[in-house]
Length: 423
Image (cartoon, one colour):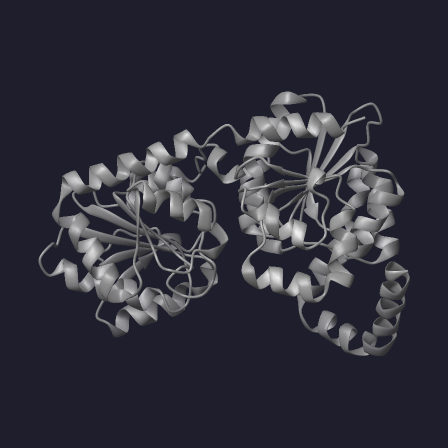
């Protein structure tokens, strides 16, 4: 009954707002391109390439973070089922772009996910004909889940977790979310404490399995654009701030300036979460008497820091750095993945807002591989300690790497779960 009213509401909204939607789509090329892709424009090539003898895995991820989490699992699926067909979808354009960067040689097709309109969902299912649907972390849609159930396609949620904010919303609107959650054949959780939340929402305990966080099994990535190392100074101690958000760069610049007075060997690398913010960050730096260079300028003129305005090079930069800061954590953005720098043996600093990576952050802190810094003052103190003491850097870096290594093996457990659901 819910799905009936949901589709009636969709139809009414389209009738009411279609003039405004048409104006919006006509006004911006990015909307035209994205919406047409999510209506199925890219499906033609898949239909032409269809091989009905191949087992088909459909893996869906919302955006960049979820795509990154999916990489080890998709790699494992390819190794376990080398003759299968793997289709990866992403809801956001940036997520799709990162999927092409990380999975071009692993997935058979990478495309935009469908809009949750019943005819579009049916079009996708007819074209893809998946043997199993795997959703990474989040992005729940009623028509998609109902159609999968109707076509008897197993649905698996992997890397499952619920933030406190999301839990409150799911609980308040359980009439909407619970039917979708119940469509999953299995829900694989990152940590044991997530079970209670799902059970409180009304999910049967037998559907819940704690298999660990896929991010621990991330494969090593090497960018094809390896010339970025030519922009790195050879005689400096490299401090990299990855996936930064607005409001964080000012704190990073402040800490950097303060410490560099006594330690001119320190060099800052900033990799913003959104590369299009590059000019904004450069202007901020200039206002603080810091002159940066952009990675895309490919210049070696004298500078105070490197601003990386590209996607897909963060892993390479971690490999060449000495100290890391994980962005999205000094501001309330949920944090970003600290696994990559930690497994490279870097001491990892992050702010108090690591809600999206709470388990990993707690692991790193409790085992001495990471430090939480509440504000710019604590950031300055922690960074200064690490710059001053090479043995402390080595100690924290080794502890960080050990945490990640000891938690690996998550993909193998997920592959066992997938095998049990395949017909």
